[in-house]
Amino acid sequence: MQDYEEAIKFLGEWGTFQWLIIIVLSLSIIPNGYLPLSMVFLGDIPPHHCRVPFLNSSYGGLGYNQSIPTEELKGEIILSRCRRYTEKEDSYSAYIDDTEGCVDGWVFSKERYVSTIVTEWNLVCDDAWKTPFPTTWFFIGVLIGSFGSGLLSDRYGRKITFISIKALQTLAGFLLALSTSWEIFCVVFFVVGLTTTASYSNTIVLGSEILNKSARECFGILGVALCFGIGYFILPVFAYFIRDWRTLQMGLSVVGLLYMPLCWYIPESPRWLITQGRLQEAEAIIRAAAKRNGITPPEKIFHLEHSAVTSETSTNVENKCKYTWLDPLKLDNIRNITVSSIISVITLPDDIIQLYLSSDTEETENESSGQEKYTWLDLVKTTNMRNVTVINLTAWIAISVTYYGLSLNISNLDGDPYVNSLISAATEFLGVAFVWFVTHYAPRRFVLPFTLLLAAGLQLFIQLVPNELSGLIVTLVVIGRLALTGAYAFIYVYSSELFPTVIRNMGLGVCGTAAGIGSAVSPYIAHIGTYNNILPFILMGTLSAISGGLSLLLPETKGEKLPEFISEVKPLQGFGFKLRCDTNSVDGNVGSNAQTEEEDPNLTRQFNTLNGIDCLR
Image (tube, rainbow, N blue to C red; front, side):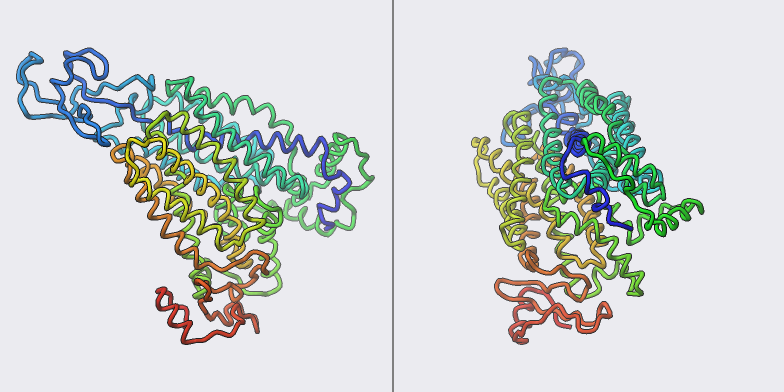
């Protein structure tokens, strides 16, 4: 069939239609900016202590210092949060030295919040583990949601799936505010996570299939990334003026509700319609776009010589070809696992986007020409491939844990959490600008280690800063998060260039899954900050340092030919050395060898041994 880009070239590079699609699709991303981090305010833990029945005063009132022992928290002496003295008589002046738990509940400070889910359901002391649990469920939903959304979108169409998911996301937001128990809150927040990743994936797919090349790049930079940052910015602003968690969640959900009328301006994907044999509907959409741009379309947009393809797609429709839930596990559909993360890819150069989007076609062509079919085991089949896979997995886990860990830990820092969140949101814009610059001008193999080691150094340095210098601590955290924002966006580019074409989607799928696991763990690392300010930074800094050090060994890819087969994967590189790894005949291609330079075997063996890497078979 004629190239789709050529068929719609008469629409022009820019016009009213392109700008309308960019604006409407980008605005749909705003809820995704605040939903993952809303628990910073919905689930914050106010200062609290045990309730004493005959003392009806508010938090820290008169009489409590005689009824409740003290404890040290973050270097400060406060009333115990989980223990009180055992009463000896009915008088508040008579106690014994024994203590007991808060059998009558707790009194929470209302200085900052009217209510949170913590004050609503007493998620403290023995139930403190329940506070980060909804966020963990949210990220599990994010991990799972990409499977179902991809299947529904491929079967029923992009537009109907997009509208359904946005409606479900908005409805789930309102239901979250109406939750009557912690258990219901967790279930609904899980659904919110499902819709978050599904919303991402469908927005990216629609934008990439409807828009032309130059418009797609603008869609990513000025659209998706900007609106994601705006969504994050909205969260602390709303939270500052709305101190009750239910009202705050309602207010955030209204943002999604206001977007719903705009959904009707989004057309179905012409590309998808063509694959379904519905050429007349596809042409109608292109003609409507031409009319909006003030352009007269040709008499026939998709020519008759394409009937072979049309016949084939029509036959599939007539035969009612059904897909199953196992299809997302097939090689040509594996991008459903990580498509929710392509927001970061699409903010980068368009050739990288095309590299990712075209890999399915390349794999299908390879298979149809009789070449070997690849499995998940090929990711660790050879030494070179195994090294690249392991280091990438380590980096993806470290970045996701640290990125979300720093974001969720904002409320545990000294200073105003609203101001801290606003500053943190600003790093989204700076991080994307940073990655855009380095992908054009800096060597690939030094960008990832630089961002990870910078973030690690700043986090580990925090333990040396006195608590009195809270402003400096916040500054270090913000700069570290800026580095992680850049790393999160950059690693999609780097990983897509490191994995060979034949298993690129599988590689990115495994990495996306690893990142999802890291995200699910991050709420509990941030929760440690309620007891110890420094320990989360030590844990995340150490993990970032390890992954940053390992990523120094990855090979350079900028300006180099991308690997097509496993045998073309480059060996690891040390400081001035290449770690020789033989991968002959892995793909069954004669003469394909990733290592072509002459090296001293003894020197190579000695260097590899020192690095603990057995590259010689």
